[in-house]
Image (cartoon, rainbow, N blue to C red; front, side):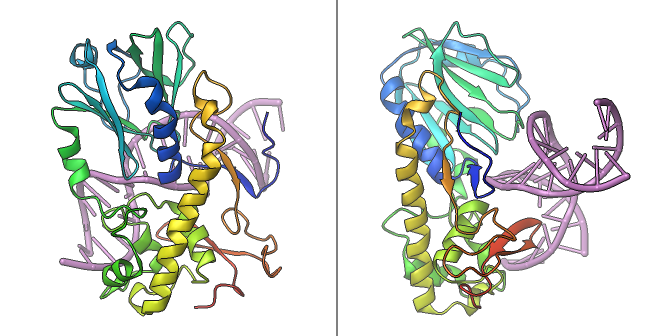
Amino acid sequence: MQDDSSASYHRAMPELPEVETVRRGLSPHIVGHRLRGARVRHPRLRWPVPAGLDRLVKGQRITALERRGKYLILGLEHGGLLLHLGMSGSLRLVAAATPPEKHDHVDLLLDSGQALRLRDPRRFGAVLWSEAPAAHPLLASLGIEPLSRGFDGEALYRLSRGKTTAIKHLIMDAHLIVGVGNIYANEALFQACIRPTLRADQLSRPRCHRLAEAIKDTLRRAIKAGGSSLRDFVNGHGEPGYFQQSYFVYGRAGEPCRQCGTTIKSLRQANRASHYCPNCQKG
DNA sequence: AGAACCACCTGGCAGC
DNA sequence: TGCTGCCAGGTGGTTC
């Protein structure tokens, strides 16, 4: 059992690093396998799970498991599935005969005798069928991949011009940049010494470069941390798809800054908690 | 057009 | 102790 007693440790929500970790962990175990079908126990996720899911996937070989933003794209020979883990979703491989627990809503049954099992207590996740999943409307309006070559300080500078919204809100806007949720937005802003409330268009070009690098670095380090827990979501040990990490500011309101000892402050922006060090993040 | 909400959902926890 | 009620958060949708 992992220690969850320290306030600075959290079970990470599925942001980009967690989704990418899930993808990397599952891909070698499922790609190339054929689906025997699907079992849907609870079709009411964010959108209804297609009624004919079993029939749609039966007999099809899995050709790829890709990621776009926080969506997973399970490519099949004909069509495919879009999967989203929402806030509380997890995917893991279990023996198909493993008894489902309360929130195990969907199983994709593999010819290996295993099942790809979606658990999602809060049901903000999604399982959608598409004839051409990569061209699904939900993916069409997504912004740039922060770990791609195209995302850098200049790209962030361009995105933020003319935007009066707070910089934290901007970097969390999936129509501009995908995959940066509340946790990594807070952490990246700390690393870049930028206060979350700063107006996006007030960010100088050098600071845009610094923030873009901080976003990449924060996400990369989280993916690396997740790599050590890859075994956790095959065969069902631990909490599949999640890993725990130490944060500088997220969830640390009232605690001393790890760099300067100043008390971490919190506020609400767009109905979401922001945490920052008033000394390290000036303006 | 852009910005600021809301709805969705349940487990966990503070407060009484 | 058990109840109430708030909070967490991604993201499409609504409203202003």
